[in-house]
Length: 639
Image 1 (cartoon, rainbow, N blue to C red):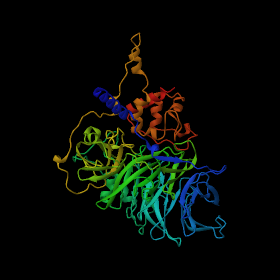
Image 2: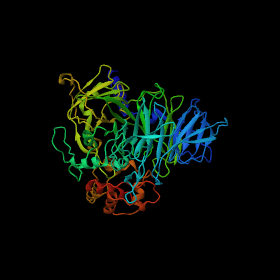
Image 3: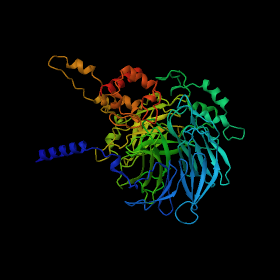
Image 4: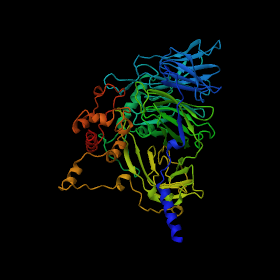
């Protein structure tokens, strides 16, 4: 009988370990309300009204009001039309405010028939006519004024090179109710997302020239965030005191060192002393580094709206944290921010993917769910649709996630939504960490550079199993610290974290007492290995003895090349067999390019070869030749 009990217990333990860990969709459901035939919701703005209705503005110049938006069949009413690419919408005192290409407009229904009959220009600004001079906003400031941001134009020869051909391009400016405007901050490239959080202004930018990756910035008055185009319009009255001359003079004077103080020659960097944004900040305090970097291709590729969770728990355990959309990858990320030495910094995770089109705008519904406005046309995105309006709903179940990550003088403290399994949490093999940064240079984006693995010295788990102090060597100011908690499990289950990887941008290392070594657990089972290291390789030997040689010469499989595709952000725009922002790898294989030709096109893309794709591929000359050739071999193996 005792043997039977032991056998049953063993089988039960095996069954628990065999259970698949829950995923995003097991806690947050995407709901798609019906849209009337003929209505195209290429959403540029979303605004929940006091009565619970929701207004949606479109890039085609319409504003729709959805009555009973939480029902199965909301009623759509056209409120306004004939506007020019509305990329933001707000409501106050009975009127809507929207940003068109070249003006802030106030719309009012004066006769109460549900349609705007008064269109007023609050303020207008110059535009050159370039297609890429998008204007985003507005966001209400605490003093009753409005914040608006202006996209740069692109160069005629280099499509990715940002230019400020007229004032306001590449800047955030303030518009007052009487119509006059003043510059607030400069240095933007594609400032598609503005957010007012606790009365302070934040914005999200996209990777490109001078922007190594996307991220979220805190915008103090007079801030400069990295892109020099707007400095062409800096005047003596501008709150940004950095000039073009100062900016470019400083580029030749910056060097970088590792945690030990030694100069580093970065991997895959042609210039041995690449410029870094934080180096410029150390001389000019008005230069603002990101609150969080959002690693390109991992946490989005075209970051958009950011919004604070003010639902008081109706949307889950993440109250007061920030959610940010991504237009290119059609998903939403989550950010925890904290202030250290008077400056914001924090942690970023993936949150929910799978939306039908590019996530552009968000607002909270009356029941605490999240309205999500989406668009694709001309920009490209993951998903099957060119437009969409959906709702993200929490089902009330507690997901196993990192709730918060806080910086400590000697590492980080991770708080979880549920107690963790003590044995897994106190095993150093469950955790790995590294840090990296991005170049600040005039070409398109940057690979992660100066990456260093971090030595985990020990951990301490709280008595309730919900807080884990991780002590490590080599923290670096201004660097992104990547923590992977793949081996940690929830207490009482074999469930892993839904999102086991977090990216913490460390603008300041906190002061304070470091944890004593005697308090730490230092057990290291050594069993946790990267998936690639633990993978079983099958030997194939044919009857003629040649099978092994043929197998070794065969093209790599997707699983074999996936780490490279992730490392170089290829999966941000491509999948194996489905169109995303770029063509599927199988469609590229059909072109019958040689491996060498594919390698050449990765380094110097030819957008004219793919005229049906709106978003040109960025040049990738930094990818090592060995990696490029392996990727090319994989693609051609799909024929």
